[in-house]
Amino acid sequence: MNVEKIILGIDPGTNLMGYGVLRVVGQKAQAEALGVIDLRKFGDGYLKLGHIYERVGGIIESYLPDELAIEAPFFGKNVQSMLKLGRAQGVAIAAAIRHDVPIHEYAPMKIKMALTGNGGASKEQVAGMLQRILHLDEEQMKQHFDATDALAAAYCHFMQSSRPQSQAGYRSWKDFALKNKERIKN
Image 1 (cartoon, rainbow, N blue to C red):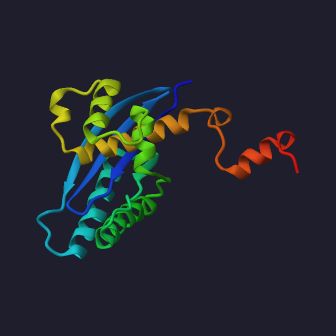
Image 2: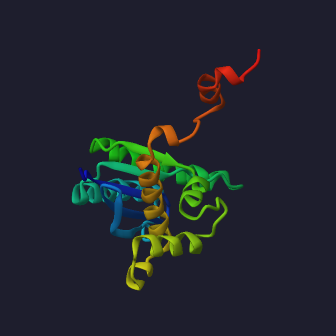
């Protein structure tokens, strides 16, 4: 039975926010759309947040995603940048909540690892792998890396959710201990 679902991926940003829409039928995924929400014309940070809410809501209404995969903010040295990025992510999440779309958050390293096998992969490597896996043409690849990063988040979620739980490994040391009581000595 081929169940169809739509996954919306978001790469939060305060100047450019990437989005990617992945259509999944059974175990096959294909890119439905990718693009960016350009926020550079808004001088005021609060106006940017309002625009993010409206545009993410519009994308949700257009594609009717079953799930949202969003990249977690990356902790850098600039605390102010991280706060702004966290606000942008929070507003995108609020738009998804408003539309009853379940949310899944992934660290940038996990997304890169899922796509390339290397948690330190460059944006170019991630985009190149997406192009090969999803058979994207050159025109689609002319988007900003924010768009391909968003599509990568959606693809990462597809890979995570398509694996049976028994193959997913251990979620924590506690999970390992509970599943391996006979291997642990007191």
